[in-house]
Amino acid sequence: MSFRKIKEQFLQQKFKKVLELELETRHSTADKIHTVGILITDEIFSCVDILQYVHDVLGISRNVHIYRYRKFDKTDKKSFKHFTEKDMNWQGVVTDASFEVFLETPFDLLISFFDARQLYLEFATLKSKATFKVGFSGVNDALFDLVIVEKANNPLSFMNETYKYLELLKKIDTKV
Image (cartoon, rainbow, N blue to C red; front, side, top):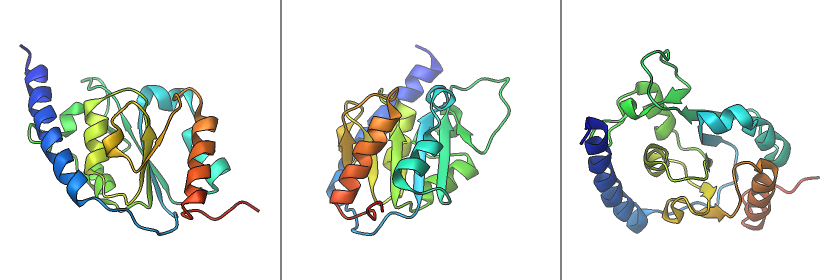
């Protein structure tokens, strides 16, 4: 068994424990949305201009921060906009300072823009201090306050549905 597989098994066990604790203590606020954090894969980011959709649909452009997951490759340069499996240790502790700052930022909204299960993105979503989390159905519904049934290749529909529910929850001002 490879080192990577063993690490992922340990992380999966830690993830389950932290998720159970989070479900007991989680609460969302009624605050309006002014800051947005986005977790996304590098592959999806290269195909979808998610920042433009957030701006066009939610009307937020200034306080949007994005962090992308990519598989570790020795040839990739270190970036403050990417994280890899090497940026988390066996206990699920984030070892990259810029990624830790992103997760500790109390965003009003975290959009987890990935539609397939991915341990490192799910763990990052769980560890995020965002007050309201939105994601795709079928990933891990327990992570999110709002789950949208859609695919990542249809970002406009995802963002429109998100806007509709945020408006119903009075977390966003209605468009004029």
